[in-house]
Structure formats: C-alpha cells, structure tokens
Amino acid sequence: LGHAILCAERAIGVEPFAVLLADDFLIGEASGTTADLISAFSVTGKTQLSSMEVAGPDIANYGVIIPGDNPNAVSGLIEKPKPEDAPSNLASIGRYVLNHSIFETLRGLEAGAGGEIQLADALHIEAGRGSVEAVPFAGKRFDCGSVAGYLDAILEVSGRG
Image 1 (tube, helix red, strand yellow):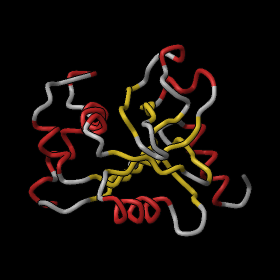
Image 2 (cartoon, rainbow, N blue to C red):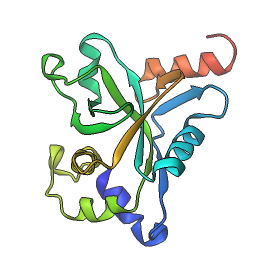
Image 3 (cartoon, rainbow, N blue to C red):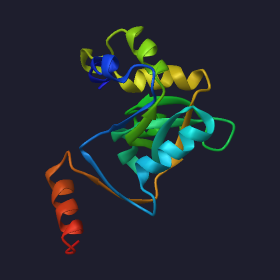
C-alpha cells in the first residue's frame, strides 16, 4: 500500500488526500466515514485514521492503534500484532485522510513486512511526531477480502442481511 500511494504522489502534489481500501465495505452513519475524516482533518490538519474497537484474537488481523494522551490522538500504529502484544483494542480500518507529508516518510522507509513499503510503518513514524489522529467509525463494516464478508455485504445492501 505504501508503494501504491507513492506512485500517486505526482498526481496529488501537496494536497491532503483520501485513501479508501476496497476490501473494507463500510456503511456509516449520517455524513459518512470519509466525510467524518475530512471534517476532522479540516479542524486539525493532522492525518486521520478511521478506527473501530475489535475484541479478542481478531485484533491480530489489523493495524492496532497505540493511543496518545489526548482523545483521538494516535502515538503509534503496530501492524497485526499478536493479541497478547496489542497495545489497545482499537484497529485502524481501510479509510484514511493523509497529509502530503506521508510521501516524504514513505520515501525514507526500507521494505517492511512482505518485502514491501508499508503504509502502517509510515503512519507509525508520523504518529510519533504527533501528527496522526483517529476518528471512531460508527456503522457496519464488512471485510470483502473474504468470501464470507463479501456475501454478508451483498446480503446487507439487498435488505436480506
């Protein structure tokens, strides 16, 4: 994901931008998840992550937020920790509004997990600088990266869920 974002730098320039991962299908409340992230960014100018609480061992499937000292502050992000090593039960889910500073951070990274440049690693560095916040997600999330999650999403939008 980090490399894909770097490939878009020329088109994005110095503007903040949203990243929406297609395998996370979100049905949010009222204004919508991305609108909530944009609104929060417009107030603070900090990168915004959509977050949700995840109970039990499933936390190991997510980037897990290390909470900061203030509400919504993020002091770090650990990608897919073992459940016993998770710093919280707050998972970062597939919606982001990123500040253009992420490009410089991504360029400075060495390959991480899977031999790839990881967005989570860059977000961890940015969070350590005090420039990342989390916006709690209110709604339903479907993991369309799995057949079961994809089918659940289809059933939900068809009114049969």
